[in-house]
Image 1 (cartoon, rainbow, N blue to C red):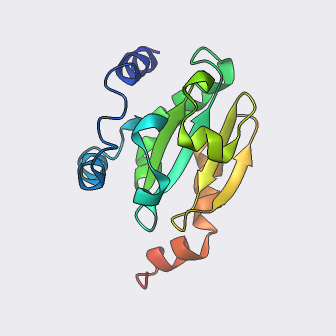
Image 2 (cartoon, rainbow, N blue to C red):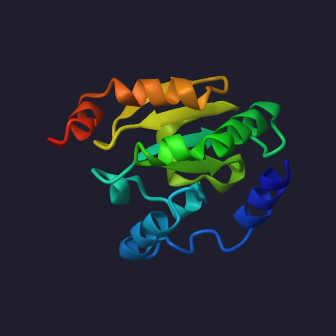
Image 3 (cartoon, rainbow, N blue to C red):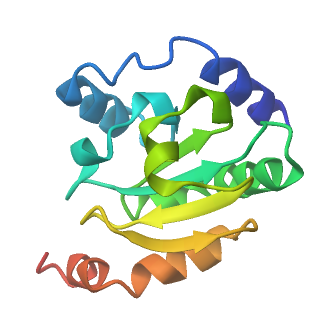
Length: 150
């Protein structure tokens, strides 16, 4: 729970700090791949062919589903990092981020986006990292990566 409080405090600081410069954003993610980013910091186009975004939406950071999902992600972040996942959160419907406009969540929603920029999975309830990882491992691009030809 302490990590979640730290995350929530961090999200309120300097939103959009990396969005202005794609190189800096990619460098920030590569330097700290286990970091959770705020939706206002992320432009999906910058991530295409680089990372697989997992976007977690909620209408409030206090949503029990959001808390459960983030705790699950934080507990097993290494498995997601291994799969080139960048975790992005959006808990403020009033902010009208580009991700919220594009993906149109209703309350809690977890979305997995492939490296090609296409939505691969939408879930209205929290998913375990094991389930997310299995979905990623079934993707053709991930299979190529694992076999060294991608």
